[in-house]
Length: 147
Image: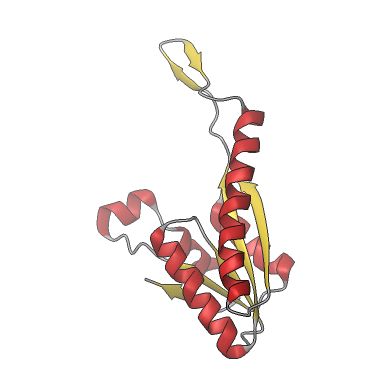
C-alpha cells in the first residue's frame, strides 16, 4: 500500500491541498504519484426559442482545455519533483469525471487515490452530486479524502 498514488485535481485551492497531502504521503512512504485531471467534455449546443447557440467550437474548446490541463498538471508535478517525489501526469476528456478517475487509477496501476472533497451536504450535495462520493462508492482501492 502507498506505492503509487493517483491524485485527481481540478486546480482549486482545496484540490491543491490534496496534492500537497499526497506529496507529503508519497515522500514519507517513498511512493510515486500520478496527478490526474479530468477535462469536462464541452456541452452540446444550447437551444433557445428555436435558435442553436454554440459558444465555442468543440475542437477549439478541447485544444484550449487540454493546454490548460497540461499547465495545471505540470505545476503540480513540479511541486512533487521539488519534494523528491517521482511524479507523472495524465488527463482525459470525459462526461463523467468519477469514472475517468477510476479508469486512470486502473491504467496507472495506482494502489490508492488521494482526492479533495468540497464537503457539500444537504440539497447542494444532492443536486450537485459529488465526484468524491461517487469515487468512494465505486472504487475498489482505498481513497484518502482531504478536506
